[in-house]
Length: 481
Ligand code: AMP
Ligand code: MG
Image (cartoon, rainbow, N blue to C red; front, side, top):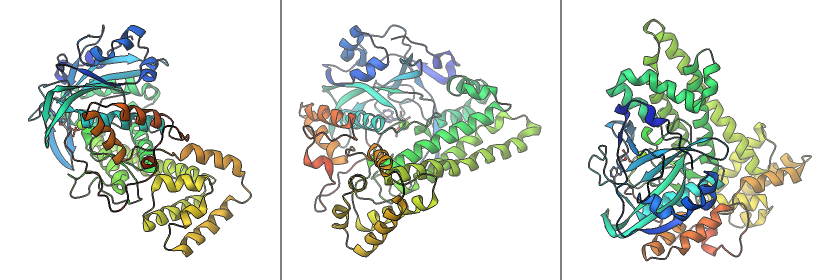
């Protein structure tokens, strides 16, 4: 593994160097060897993964540091935040030469811990580990993780005492929208250097542009629109879309009370701490737009004073692209899920018609799309109360597929409609077993979610394929982690 630490070259006002505070009596939780190989870990490093994650073996070339940032949380300015329990170990190159951050979560107190204890619990670490892995294989841009360790010897107080754990996560970037907010509020003289760093390292193509900052803004907006479209198509609800949880590369970061949609309820609140429903599934596209608007305001000081007004208007123009880009990604993804021709308004409307049926009939989002892609129309119809609406939909649907190369559309459908997603009750079962010392369910889900589009009869259990029945209460997901 070769380190190429870029962040640590920035002003030391932006971080605090410190090392991992190891867990006592540490145990290995799970390890992702495929990812480790992609990141060019040597065999010796792979064999030593438990000590590496626990900080007992310090990786040569790593330079652990906690980043400071700020953010808007639930729509309100939250002031200074930062890695309160995480450390950026450094940056390495994957096999393709791409820069990847290695970040430890749950590594102990930092100067940015505020009232927190610097730790993460086994429950939340398993949830993050499996979700990052699931999204990766569903082709949703996301952080991922190499592995996690845990300790029964260190119990952490949340709603009750829980085992401590540490996760070694990877992301193409940990620079958050909130980094810019912190700089403008507390160290505005760093803004130019910091923005240049972001462009050089993450969007070097923008340097060729006459206005690199505007091009950079446009790229961040586009990447975010793409990520949100993929969330909506997958049925993923992030739960805490604060500006400190959004990065500048548009990849999913910071899993808390997230959820994958089961019965299709667009106004579903997965996060029980989100009483107002700010971060419901259906609000995600507009909240991301709001986050980007907050962020763009932090670029305005980069313009010379006489050009500020014109620059503001240019930034606003960039933001106007968000909706268009989002709709482009979302509608083409929905058409593929439907097995209908893309870039076609009728196909898109037919997709929306199908979603309305799923919503009205409270059908399972993932299973219904999969049934559609295997032409199991009666399986869906049999669950509908309003059969006439379903039949009308099906007539339109067949008309739109007539005279098309159906085998190609069907192939697209199979590749865009997973069989397996990470339902809350699946994660919950894996957590409960792990807390009893049995990691086999984590391992089973890890394997299952590695191939979400392929039937794995030998691995799956019936519960993986459906929501809990209506008489079983939803798994409660709290913000505590
Ligand atoms: P999150 O909601 O997990 O994105 O966290 C929001 C902020 O609180 C970030 O600055 C975190 O580093 C910090 N934080 C969350 N949990 C803890 C904890 N247990 N100890 C210290 N800081 C924490
Ligand atoms: Mg966070």
